[in-house]
Image (cartoon, rainbow, N blue to C red):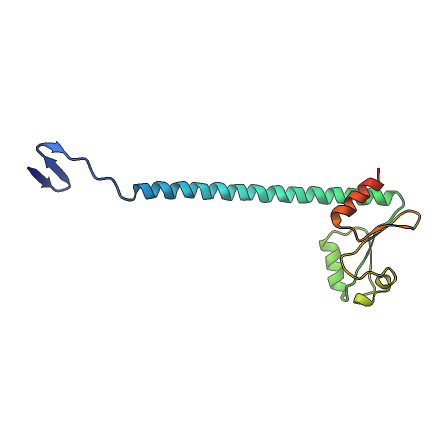
Length: 152
């Protein structure tokens, strides 16, 4: 005989086990994924911080290579193909270009660009202390490697 009284069920004087909560398993899963998302977010923040540090170290290394190269009586010259002075000066400042920058603000009709047959940008020409062209159109990584070799 089963007697139900309020929230309790009694059968022959024995207490019936309560039914499992239907959402308890779902709650466990949700808690697990919530913790995983938090861990992922922390890892992304750490990765972002590490990328920023790496970028800063590369910039310092590049700056050092440029300074070493210039100490050897050599120069790095930037030629801009801009047509607006404000845009050009902002780009120089934003990109921390500490070397000499040239521009006649004539866009693709720039005299230096025509003289050296510069047909695409970015473009660079590495000139040695004797005035001879050592290399040209290097990627930033290639330029950094070349400068490091020349400064040894």
